[in-house]
Length: 80
Image (cartoon, rainbow, N blue to C red):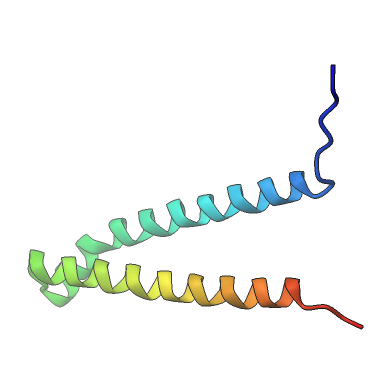
């Protein structure tokens, strides 16, 4: 029976992926729970709340994407 060798960092990579998914779920739940307070405090309509949620999602995605690009560039950089 052939043995399968795993990369030594596979556990770390899995932990990072799971932590990032936890952060995303936590972030979305915070935004959803804040929408009624935003509606009450600012008097936004349902359409306005949809805009708030979409704008937050786009900003979060852009920040996450730029951080990912910077991290990949940093990790793939070769030091002589």
